[in-house]
Image 1 (spheres, rainbow over the protein chains, first blue to last red):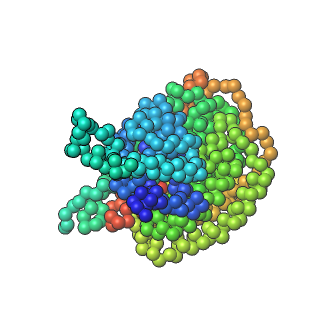
Image 2 (cartoon, rainbow over the protein chains, first blue to last red; image 1 turned 90 degrees about the vertical axis):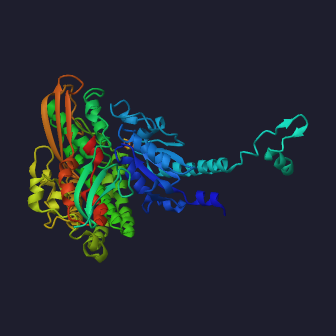
Image 3 (cartoon, each protein chain N blue to C red; image 1 turned 90 degrees about the horizontal axis):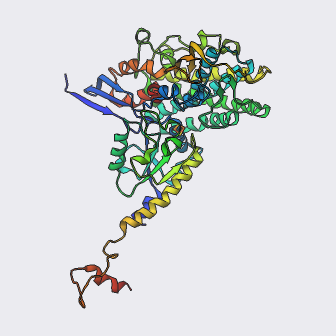
Length: 174
Length: 362
Ligand code: SF4
């Protein structure tokens, strides 16, 4: 097994409340509990952004929490997936247009999976997280792909540019 | 005298459900001073309730103030609006509101207890409590149609009726839950490992609790008998359905656990009484009036006294709505009770306050 399969079999979750009503947060907590048992996918809740692969965000972004949200996102190592949990994290929901709120977290950080509902059910959260695992896998592949292999071969006249190593590798692959 | 260090905790932390920031000044691992910063999730709900939404819609908006006690918020708002409209709601609606409030209390208290166990480092007990808590979520879903955010109380009454099958299943599930609660009581009371972390931690005296205006289980654990259910009779007939005051004396984390567990027994009894004696009547009082004048309402949420103030001006939109949440009253005592404790037990103490910052910041 290589690193990619570890990542897929045991993604770690980071949870941040960006101003929601706690409803979705307690459902995330319920996911960790024995009935829904998200640990069967190898997920555990960590408090450390530097160790986690999946960021679960709830709540519309309030003006005070947005800096922390972006900070946490920036601290997470690549590849990372962001899940917006609940109606208000996806669009702002009922809080849209209130003076201290932004409409949804995708105004600040890129979101991969949107989970709907106010509040979301644990089944929906688990479904979203499993979808996120697929996205995590493709992201990992994209990240690990060699950039050089994709390069167009450069020819100057009839001569191959020796400095471009990609040219040497490519014929060997075919 | 050692050197003083400042240790921050939050805004994002594994032991915190919500963004909350504490700054501890510690000396030889002992906390000497605490600063709290709770307004990370201020959204501006009060202002929106007085401008964007009509007064009948507001009961759905204030439910989103807090997901843990959304029924308390919706009920308190509905009551204050009914006072402004000067209507009396049917008796059955009152009983159903009490039923859902008590079911909500069961789930909220069990969540808090499990959180205390987790933050004390007792992961197995966290899992066990969460497992036992799941029945209350299922019952709430059966009664109201959603696991959280019930939107059960509306202005004038309640939105749904209680079906006989649901009432029967509530009784059956509660019967099953009583031995489980006994088991939890035994663990929280007698477990030696847990007692090391909980006994004597975060203690507050009765005088301090009185002086700092503490409410809810936090106050009752210190021996202060404050409970809105004991004081008001006009809006919801709590005494009729068998409410009983629960107090402890020591005021530490252990006492708060025990108060919460013993309150669950009271809640179970209240629910059984409500279902056995549910009166037959309509569910909702219709009216075409507009809110006028001023009114206040107090209600016992799982965390303590919830206070609503509203002012109407004979239009669809309220002129002012003020929410004072239980955690807001407790913040002063929260910072006080840390003093003299080990820094290591701070997460457990925070969890035992059962802080609800979404309520506080609105
Ligand atoms: S989506 Fe609804 S339940 Fe979830 S955090 Fe937002 S307001 Fe609360």
